[in-house]
Image (cartoon, rainbow, N blue to C red):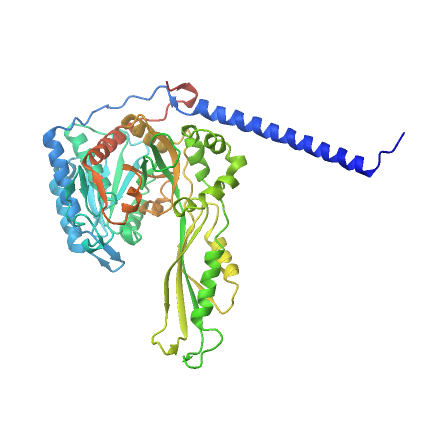
Length: 522
């Protein structure tokens, strides 16, 4: 037999490798295609038989519509501003309490409702259910707002509740007085119709959420723990109905927050012997610290897209995209690295990809001719669900890589646990059903909050915390949150009231329908 030589053997080996790669690619493509079709088929599955509840309808007439809008506007006009732990408007909080009693007399007089003030300015309501064996749930919202000034560029004074083009403008219209007033307005209407819940529930209204809720929400939690309360789920503010916000998505999507990113504030500092500017050292405290900060900005935290709950968001939304995005999002097991690289290019989507690093304060120097002895910088980090606080601190230390830079954790906490969102998750499915009943054309998906809410304090009382309000966000609206020209449409506020009106009734079922009796939506 003739030996064809090493060149022939190399060519043969390359052919084998190429054929193997083609086979692997074909297999992967086949699996991905089947998965894409499978997700398409299963999207929109709805449980067939929901247990019947009271099925009361709000039937808001013109007089009621004018009244609910007037109450809401009055709430916006009260400047319940929280600035710091020691600076919040107690006079406004007392005035807000008086408004609640005036606006919702049936809530405060009903024998079914027990109300108490907590930590002087927060409110806790217990609405007694007729079947005590059913685990209660909690609706959360907060009364306080962040500061706002007309000089910032508002089209209407931020505490005027001015109406323009069908919108009500003012601080708190989407964070978070719309939920405060919407929840109580819904309960007021239900009680007026003779409603008595089967499943009891709590309403918690914190007064200091914008400054971390250490007095309001945390005191409410302590009170409930002392009473041995456990909750089926908690629903707080968080995500919304996004319309035209997600590029390439066909139709609006309601994202229900199932977790929150963790948070850390880290102080970096450099101390040196001060000197005169006429005889500067080769490196100053400012220069050393600036170099450390630059290294942090040039070396972001690792890309973790697909390792946290954000994967569920895109898989739930995949069927609403056209090819090739539908194919990619249906197969994150294969395409997570690719999609992660695309998303990290924009600040708003980069937040879902990794732990974000933001240098927010830099302090140094007292006089132009003195080399300062001390330079300080503050770094705020929002921690991805796949990382821990300690892992993030270790990465900062190694990235800075300079022992002259002292690192101090000012405050921080790990990402919040991920709440269940499968077909057996009571709270998620109730919220989803309520959304779909109100907005039939909306796609519902789990999401992650990149900010933090009062609900993070309730993790010892429940395994399932959800963050959602049916506020419609169109392109640019997210920037109104804590920004200028915060607003909500009159129609959307009324929808909010109807949402809570229906949600409370939907929670009266004893258990979810059997998911095995599902039928396809037509």
